[in-house]
Length: 140
Image (cartoon, rainbow, N blue to C red; front, side, top):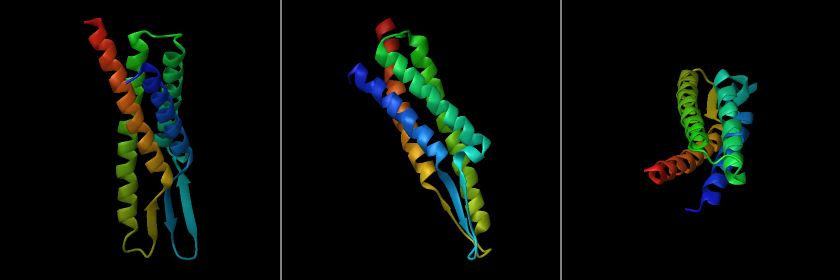
């Protein structure tokens, strides 16, 4: 894969992680009233937002050629792994809240933001992982 494509994928993954963090993560309908919560209303959502911003910065630095040092690539990979772990933990928490809503007459659903953030973090993991592997192999 072309370096430019990998770095553009890192930026795209980071952007999707940011967008997903700003969107709805859970919606609850109690019949007469509905509630929703965005990612940034939680500590986890703020962390995924930060990881997305770091990924955009890392991808931009690598794409522009300003910083081609392998430490930058490792920082991107670390941000992607961090974002994935935080998002996975939040997904499990949202699933637990949905399970708690069962039997109460309320319906709860996972919002689109979680899925968009998940696509972004998976894309960033693939792109940064590939970049790190190539930089490591080039150093050998």
